[in-house]
Amino acid sequence: MPIMGHDHGAPSAAAGTVSGTFRARLLWTIGISATITLVQVVGSLLSGSLALLADAAHSLTDAVGVSLALGAVTLAQRAPTPRRTFGYYRVEIFSAVLNALLLLGIFVWVLYTAIGRFSEPVEVKGGLMFGVAVVGLAANGVGLWLLRDAKEHSLNLRGAYLEVLGDALGSVAVIIGGLVILLTGWQAADPIASIVIGLLIVPRAYGLLREAAHVLLEATPQDMDLSDVRRHLMGEPGVLAVHDLHAWTVTSGMPVLTAHVVVADETLRGEDHGKLLARLQACVGEHFDVAHSTLQLEPEGHTEGERAVHT
Image (cartoon, rainbow, N blue to C red; front, side):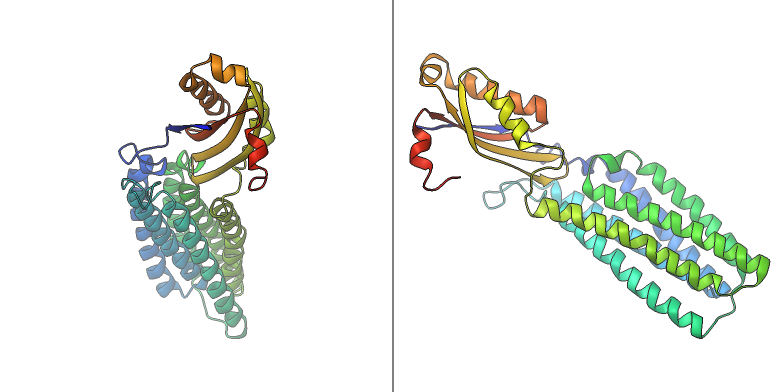
């Protein structure tokens, strides 16, 4: 009979997800983004700058997006249940999708409004526009510093980092636009800066959606080569073949792997099955950082009976 082993090394509700480690930084980032939004809205009303208003909308999206990230982190800490055996870890990925959609919505609004400004110009106070943008850039720099490490560990937190980075780049565009208006009086610099801010959003939103879709489609983790996994398993003494090998990601930093491992009859007879499973699971854990693996040991000839239902 097949013998199955499970390695339940995935993060527990008590340990939390990778994103949960950075919860305090997310809270600080939300506060910074909300403050920037308020300053930019007031600055836009006083200066007449669309670029500042676009940047304010982007900052508001930062606050909303990071709030979604924080909410997802909180939900992900809930314990697994019989109906949700992996708990709510996948909520983090849905949060990343919502974040990307918010960014795309901002882009459409900014582009539409900026085009209207070319046909109906609005006088903009370049000095005020410049000053507010400098304050926004400084505040975004603090946000980037807070999330500098987090972005490497979680797709959800990477989305939050990209939000703040995009807003920082947007502030640079507003600063340049404000300088142009201040020095030359060319009012078209404001809607042009607005369009630049919008264009900065698109590639980031697309990249975030693509990575989230990779997880939701349960594709093989991008840093894992299944042929390499098979080679390592077959390099273990007594292993004859590996089939039905699958790997996917539950949430950022939590890869899962399953496989059927055909083992020589003499190995099954001569070695403790528990030790054999532990050895194989240690193999995938050490080489591929897989904390949760399910391996089914099968005797020689067992695969023949499975060919009708397995590839």
